[in-house]
Image (cartoon, rainbow, N blue to C red; front, top):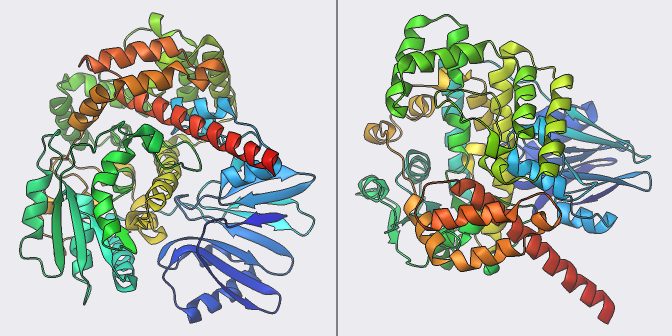
Length: 573
């Protein structure tokens, strides 16, 4: 067995042969941490995941070493086997260097095309032989170096009111612990519900002073700035600053992007974030609050309509279908029909359909009916796959369909956990990129207690036709203003994306002209460049897919450069 906590802050306690370490931001005191040694002796691994904060746990009872991820998987643990031993690390790159692993282009492509379908992506990473342990699991390694992986708790089910109480307590605790621990507390303050609520909660902490920044992006028209200014007005302890940076665009300064451990789909918008993050770094921030994860955790996919249809609650189905029909300009009967059809679709048949979709040449595929709902589907990048890639991913999905064991009544919950844990992989690299800029990124919405409370409520119970996030709104009632909880609009940054696309199109073409995924036979670079040309001309298209591909190619280029530099250092040594 070999373990590595490279680049991680941690605290440890021990008693004779029993040892315990928490890695990350854990806000428990020394006595409570030492009490955790009893859980280690008893093998009660889940008991070690209930402290405030965001962290993973490493425990050793003298016979076993156990590495325990957080529930959402934002604190990654990577595993590899070599010479009959289990190796683990918090860095996939470090582990790949140790076992001399090559880049796994098939795994990278699978995550680009089916990021929220774990049945297709599996536990693969960007490196062959390096696997990622899922959130909510424990890696158990014996003294002979053999390992097993166990889910340490089963999902719970709570009523709405009970979940509201837990969510309120968990979120207030998550924010107040950080506020009290901070020497210089900073925060994103977009004016949206998620980040704004965190800042207002932080200012309720006795003695807290918060420096909060709002991106006053001139390229995108939305109401964020006005909402942020209204929330900040007269708020004791809140120091608010609007940040304007004409160079803070998507795709700007690509070659200067901080390297991440794994490919990160938003890597190409790093300069946009740096436009407002730099002000917090200059203030000496040692805790920076963000609303990251709240949309994935607390908003609902329209597939919840299938659960409503399955419940035979016709008044609710009609009300929610009408709201979706109006929002999407669809016939109401088509929305209802799609919900009923999905309610009768098993997860295995959804995976079989995905396998068929992946196998078809997109040029010959029929357009998707606009009202259709799917449990799983491929991302827009599917349009640029080569025949080799389509065949490979189709076989993965077909094999998954044969092995599927998801009960029909549990599909919504299964899909919600899959999406949340995929966001966990995103959050890990978002934190890596922010910390590379010197900003200590925190995401209170992804603390274990908050996640447990929100995910205990069925998807249909988290949906509303009148407010964005009814569970969050109920939890924060009387803690933040009603006018914020009732906000129905959400800021969008499409203007920034298209402005960045036009200004930096030459750099993007250069990156795609030297595409490694194309050279390895996975992506049709000609089709991707044609899409870039259309988008640059202002034609709506697959912007998200292009951004993901650019980010993957950027990571591959950075990896090649770092490997070349390492080889040069070895040669000169």
